[in-house]
Image: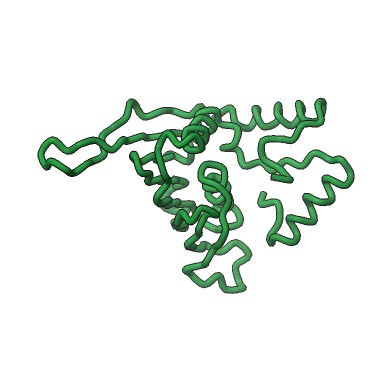
Length: 198
């Protein structure tokens, strides 16, 4: 990962895999975390209402770690339609820390922000929706849900209240589940959870 450094190179890799009947899998490990798959389902079914805004943080460079945040946005929220860098990439660093503003095909604004990996590892996604807020924290290890509810002190206003316990995602088994998925795809000819074409 990433599959390629630009869209045309990625499209060629996908086309080549299709042409020769190869299985193409990219290991964005959070795709094999069942609790995150459940969250993706909740968002797709509209259980949280319309998605209003997404913020994502990732450690270090956009190629090594930023692509994990981008893939998580893509998987949970939908395809990105446009990306605009907010910080200059320069040419001296092959893996620059970039901040970017993205829009999904549905027009949802997403802010992607790089953080200093020397301080601590931080990969988080914060999803604001019509009915509440969902945060994927701890590098994908936890899901925090809050729901919009009437404010008892100020009639007509709503605030966010916890919606159940913080959910641990069982992310530790993601690598073995991705290998199991790849083996199953090789045996059955099915497509892996994360690969081309999508």
